Amino acid sequence: MRKTERKILLLLFIAISFSAVFSQNQKKTPTRVASFTIDADEFLGYDSFGFSYQIKNNIFSKIKGSEIYEYKNVSLGKITKADILNPLKIVLFYEDFNSAVLLDNQLNKITEINFSQNNVPIVVTSIGMSTQNQLWIYNSLNQQIGLFDYLKNEYKTVSTPLTENFQFYQTDFNTFYWIDEKYNWFSCDIFGKTTDLGKVSDFDKIQVLSPKQYIFSKANLLSFKDIHKDGSETVSEIDILEKSLNKFCYKDQILSIFTAKEITNYKIVIP
Image 1: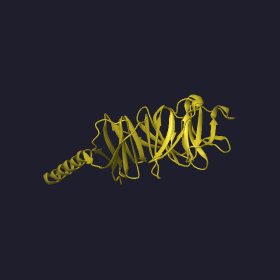
Image 2 (image 1 turned 90 degrees about the horizontal axis):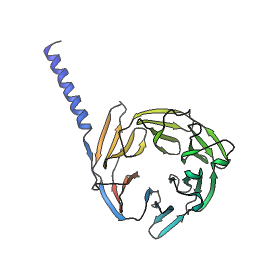
Image 3 (image 1 turned 60 degrees about the vertical axis):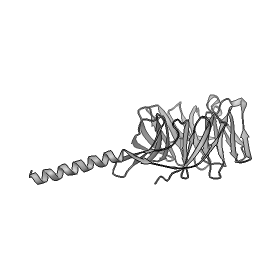
Image 4 (image 1 turned 135 degrees about the horizontal axis):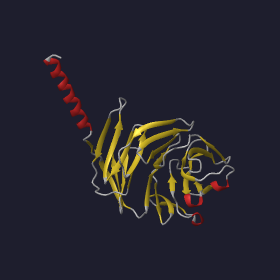
């Protein structure tokens, strides 16, 4: 190899290495837009109508200004999961009683589902709203992801049995995402197509934005990861004022940080 060619290759290697290092140290600085105190055990996020959702003393509530709606069901025990993806059909999951309750936009009960009374044995450990009157569920008896039609009271599996336990899951209308204990990231669509999305970074909390993007926190440091079409990754620290956080959620370009006493909203555009 000629000396000139070796020099060019060396310069290319340095440029690529510098680019990789640079991409791992970018920062996103959001704009703080509002902060207010909150009295809640868990903040769940906002809907498109401006209502915030929270749980306090096992009472689920929906608040906007002076408008306050509440729902509680003492007979079913502790609320394990609240899905507010569809504000017109909210899902509350009570794992101890293998049951779920669907609420309307004023938190009136639409229906109550006891999965133990289904014709097909179901023990639900994960749940979320899907499409066409269906709920995503993970049935721990067969270790499969399925869809439950709550109008017809019918259940069908859509995935093959999972071989690893998962430490995180998130659903939207068409997709069930999960991350197993080895930090492998997968998705399953309503037709049962399962996709390996790669490995995620070590996290304390995480929110999936798309099959290629997610926000995660580790040791109170908040970051955004973007996986590009060529397989390369960009990790950007999100520079916020809070030094400790209980939860975060991102929706409609608003990043909400929930600490022990308050919620702070930031404006941030994620492409």
